[in-house]
Length: 228
Length: 211
Image (cartoon, rainbow over all chains, first blue to last red; front, side, top):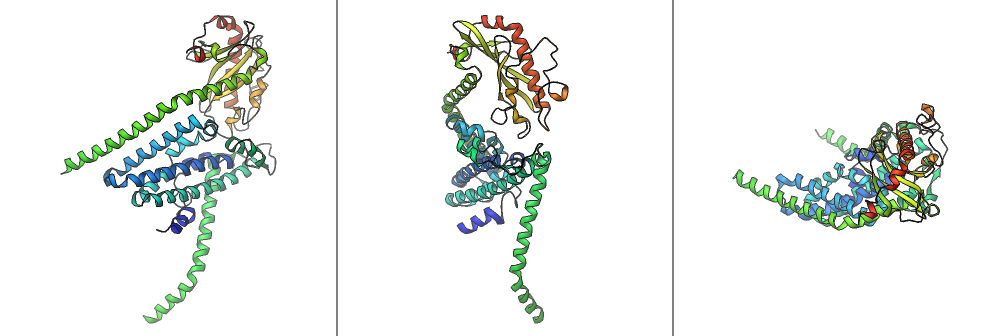
């Protein structure tokens, strides 16, 4: 698979959140604001790249029958080590991202990529696949976070300074002020509903593209019919 | 044949498990000290916010002592005593609110010697993000609404959320969290009023005093 294909697969065609529907638990749990979505997205991206590289490097030593438990161990070790290191050396970031890190272990997108891609490809490609799948996941998180934050709170980038440092406090946009947050948008059911609309939108776009692409194909089939 | 491949796979799996465990253990050992240092720094920062330099001239972290009272927590809990010229001026005590929406909430309640609240901070909680987490100072100023208040007697009905007839706001969609915090803070203040002299007489035996 070429790098272009990997990019396309990760960002759109085989997007982990929209098409594979993997990692829904963390996705729905933390996308109440753009800031949280960005935090989880970045943390997932890093772990995904790391675990893909590791799985790809050990793939020749792992018999097929025990690959799943080995991958689980690799990912769990990776996440634990990253959590400890962040806790020790980037405490400020850990406090913002900390709650997302254990959630990453529950993200089946990571073991999914280990099994479907990293265990069959050299480490450079596996790393690139991790990057693209991670980006695809992060983009969906951001869209979902933005929708829920605007509908629920009337703001965007609320609390960005907790993640990015004090300068980011200026990023906060108040679109309209609400006396009471719209609970439906903030709670998980709202996330499910918004997620449904995003998937529907992607399917509509795909359908339009397929229709446009299939026009010349139709003429070819007609030619076949007359030949029968 | 099968026995052989089972043995081989078992050994490989065990090998990975050993390497993984070693890696985690090694990292845990290497990071234990910086993590403890960061947590101590964090605690000190909170302590200094609640008990500013004007009210004490001692090392708060070294003044730590474990106090035991069923109204605070099931286990003994650390109390930091602020003294000025050798006289106690205030104290900060860790309290557990066991009845949060999702589990216990750890609070640090600082109380002036006259029994008024100097400040409250949330140390640890698992409340719903976006709803119950407004008890964090970085999310909302709500937790400062205790500042300067005191508890009069055992049935001070101001110490409840507004929905229960008290004076403290609750958050839209989350009443249980602020209710738990208000009750725990009230318990801490009441217990302090009754026990403060006993507590001040205890020897320092935890935190910075341990080493």
